[in-house]
Length: 165
Image (cartoon, rainbow, N blue to C red; front, top):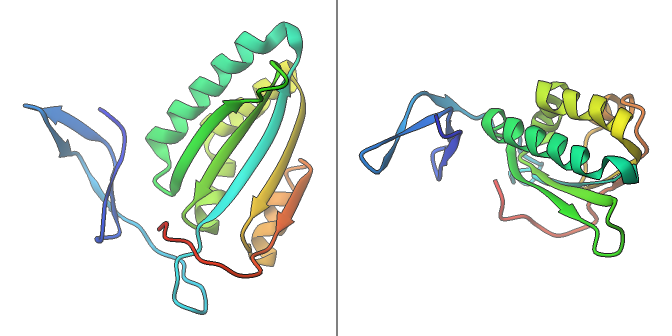
């Protein structure tokens, strides 16, 4: 199994693909519901999570992040972009950059076991975690996300567009 794939223009994700004779063959195709704005546009948004490992735990922290990343990639078709980057000025500091297809993708992410496990590992291995969301979320989604207890700053969209989604 090689993970998920997106079928452009068809609003379908392939849940799991296998390599057969140099081709990726769908195992199961899953319809993806698109959430639209009033303008009938997709509502993707960006999330930046800044975190810091305790100096003695940096390698274990990166290993925990790797496991989370692999799990998210395999199980979250609504996660359009997911990277873990190192701060160039602090060897213990990192940031996740995540682009979600819509608010439902975020709510799924919050309960997804790979993320839940990473958060538990962060509590033991890390010493800081803050989140910034770039794009407008509805009040109910903000309330559910804020209930996680992490410091979150919301940057609602004033104007602009996205070609994602």
